[in-house]
Length: 256
Image (tube, rainbow, N blue to C red; front, side, top):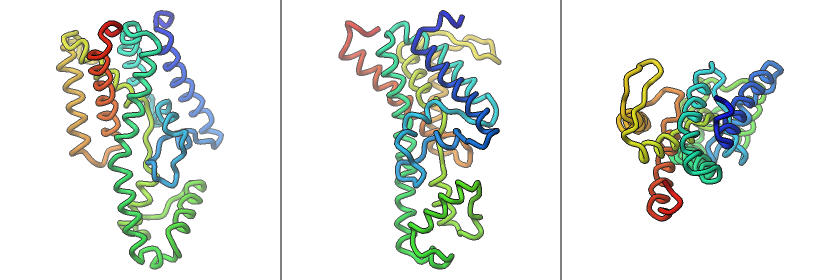
């Protein structure tokens, strides 16, 4: 079965699994790649440019469910699309979906962080807690993260606590790119019958995948308090759908 997976899908699978295993091993030695390589908001004090790419190949350390379902979808849907499009087009599609997920995830968070920063600068919240300015507070936040601690929300108050939380907020996983694959597949093959692992009943892709994407759109608007980046899922699906519609309209000779 592994030998039948097309090359780009196979290499993406190997990179994700290898990074997960290496990260778990290094975690026991005090090196936290999950933290280093995860994606942050573009205006976060913890943001690094490489995170735009690396976050797509990292997964949650809390069990194997996250990486298992992402890699399962990558093999099932990615293999099919790569065989149809070829390696180059599929790779562009996959990476673009991941980038789109990251950008939409940043859309609201960057604005919230910007507004909080302005609110803090224009107030005396920092002085009340012994900090001279925002730069000093940011430096202490970075030092706390390196030491594995954080300020308690009771000490910071709601505004500074939200600022600390948004700066530390992160995104990991191939889910955004996977949702691009799902969107591309359902547009091209809406009537293909699929079956869930735990519910062996044939369901057309337009209902199963379409319903799943619609559910994520709903969660991105109304859900709060969980650790899932619903906006990233929606962003990946939007970019994936846009690529398929564009290619289908302007490249009819080389597009399925």
